[in-house]
Image (cartoon, rainbow over all chains, first blue to last red; front, side):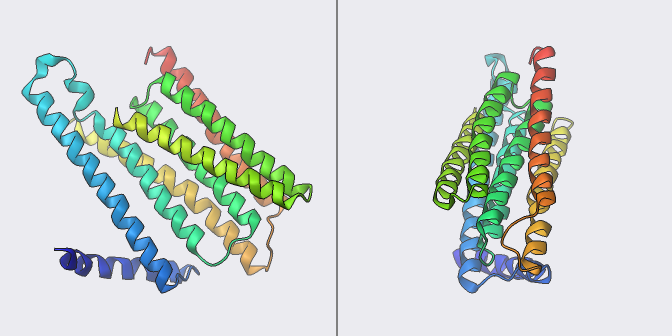
Length: 189
Length: 71
């Protein structure tokens, strides 16, 4: 079974890595293998949640009088979409981080961009009604905290404090991970 | 079926938003690497932080709008 999946995925990955190479992003075989593992792990996560939501929908359809049907039915696909977005974003960022060596500035800029992507995903979810205003406000508060750490890292680097900048960036990355975890936890509800 | 289409549209919107955010940094890094720079210019930083500022403002506005609707 695993072999058949590899046979199916190999040409897709090959085409994708070729596309990346045509855009100046050459991944080593090790990086390609890591990306493939990440892709499979992300896909497995999405499939797991899809199964979860399908199960909830079938239960909701079977007992519409229970009152929780709408919350657990197709409406949950919006949450799934947000989760899918985060997975795609993580894959894209992992790919970006894997390509060649990034300077501190490039690393920091990538963290800013990941931060932007999470905030954009949360905005879309609030607009679509799949996150409540309260949940969105919580995401915003956490996003502002992680943004402050990113700004601190940038300020430290500008001041010539390389180790301080690196520490702040690590803290910002941790805060960003916590933000992603929070959004994922809300997505599951 | 009618409930699926909006969800699919939402998913596409979200994917586009994520792709736009992630793809924004690629040309900046490629440009810096092509020019042999290890640091970003002030304009490039302004682009990166400006996008993030706009994203936070949009989330804040979306939260306010959702709250006004009672969501």
